[in-house]
Length: 258
Image (cartoon, rainbow, N blue to C red; front, side, top):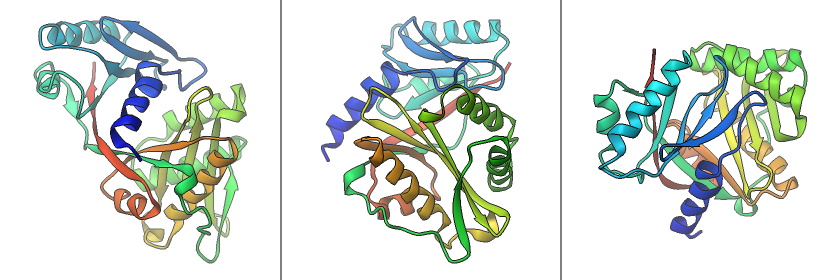
């Protein structure tokens, strides 16, 4: 893989040329940034910026004024290669708070080993209705310790609007949900995204996460997606590297709260 070329393609297709990730969201381009605007439970934030040192502080102030005017908390999704080089320090000075950095990882779907099965006693089921979504939300809340309401909102909205662009899957041990994840397809681009992969603590290290990645990769391959992208935590990065994903840089969510 030509890392520089793929990173440039990712920036162009998935950030600068972003599509809304929620039926009720919209993409706006203003003041040197590309941002998504959604309701209170959707994702609001800056996806891409083309800034220089002279205009960066003004652009940051403009985005704060815009989102706070809507009554929205929002996120500035900053990548290590974004300019200016000190944009993170500028966000900090403007009142943003940094979440833990993640690794942008991308794999060519055709190069991945797709045959990884779930561990014994576990089966993977599609979450295609409200009951399935609730199982995925239960895993999310147990695995990450955060409120599952935004995920519930997003999955139900996507499934109602267009089942073809999101694939949610739950790992069940008997009737108990022990892992969950989703695949987001982006029609018109060569990319698909792996999101929300989580395993409850008692089942970690048994291969549930690997099986969820392989399952989603098979679905992406069946849809003709050339690349799979994931923002990997420190916990998931080693697993993804062993599966064939390449680290292309880091990304930090900078959060601004009203």
